[in-house]
Image 1 (tube, rainbow, N blue to C red):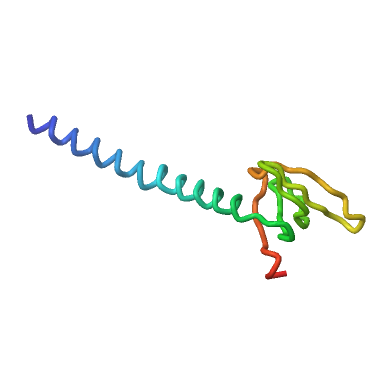
Image 2 (image 1 turned 180 degrees about the vertical axis):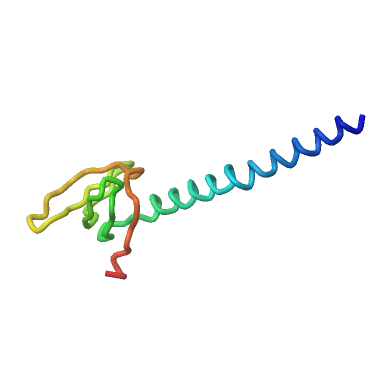
Length: 91
C-alpha cells in the first residue's frame, strides 16, 4: 500500500509540474495575442510574423490592410499574422 501511495504522490507532482511549466504559460501567451489582435486600430504601426512593417490603413473582420514602403504599397494580412504593434500616439 505504501508503494502505491508514493506513486500517486509522484504522479500528482508531475501533473502539477506540467501544468505550471507548459499549460499555464501557453494560455498566458494566447491571451496576450488575443489582446493584441483586438487592440489594432488604423494608424498603428505593425510588424508581421514574416517581417513586414507598415501602418494600418483598414481592418475588416480578420483581415488587416496596411501600407509599407515609400510608394505606399498596400498589403493584406490576417490578424493572427501580426507579431507586434506600436500605437499611433506613440510614433
